[in-house]
Image 1 (cartoon, rainbow, N blue to C red):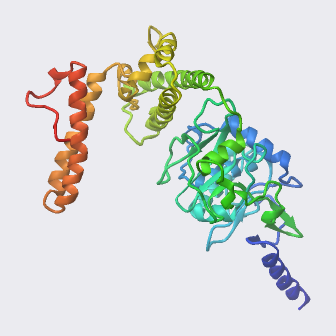
Image 2 (image 1 turned 180 degrees about the horizontal axis):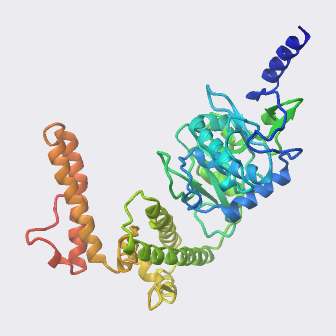
Image 3 (image 1 turned 45 degrees about the vertical axis):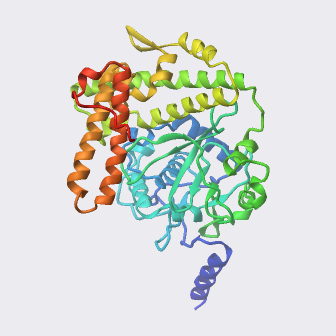
Length: 454
């Protein structure tokens, strides 16, 4: 009777003290996913986690380790992997499903290994976590933070309601980026994929107390059980980002974050120079990816969506570079900078795209829309040197889309068909105009002319 009463009291206590509670009769054993001993999360361990993210995580992290993820899996996966490496506690509390953590013994039948990526038991637990966790559970496993440079860093989670999530990969404090907060995020559905590097893009959470910038809660041991430390007891806890006053005096929520992280006012010419340096660095990083992809894909066809395609295609990388270029273009126009002087500076910067061939930064800046992200494409196409070929490819794709739309929806949904056809026809017309400007007209049918009504 006494032991029964004790169990009831323990269950009630766990429920009242913190939600969610992991009320297991906890004793460390060789059967659990990993042991933590006396290791616990602290501010120092959070800093170590941030440094580990910066040093080890890049767009291809999950491709390299053959891990299927979607957007919500990314924050969980990185937190659990680091916790496993550092022997720190980790937990997750999926809605309507049992909580799991480092203490779980469901995979005791699988062998473990000193290396996390070779540890079959850990990888099985990680897969199970992904099947249960979501953007909904992510909010229960995190807490809102104050917006300062000590609390917003690599490893911080961003959450946009139930739609999207990701992590911060780095903070840039030299004015060379559109936003000082840089993120990594994956798409859906879950698959082995490269993550996308982006500037922070997060809608104003208003007062929902769900979205925003968050950090993972700390599992703490209470008696023989694990539970989460209450949100307000965490070192970076704050609900300031949900206050109506948070964005007052700023253009929007994102600017309020940017100015709190990096309040410095930059000289615009100096900023343009830093953006050019950043652009050069990004394009130089693209060169070996393109070269290696070209060699690999000459031997084996790189089908879209295949692991090799994920490694060597560059749509995410190219999107990020395109955003930098657009930002530079806007900076020049808005601040009345000398465009010709900036283009001359770019003309002196050469990118060695092959051992015996180079292009200027100016050329790439002015022709970026013609760069191919497809690893199966030629080196010329990858660097915008086959403009006529790219025009022909885009025109062919648009015309095939028009044919498909008319065949599939012409009678069934004529309104949709008309609008969709109009959208694709605009692409065709633009390509025809570009082909005429670039003397590619010999590639086009004789009756191809831009639709003047568009």
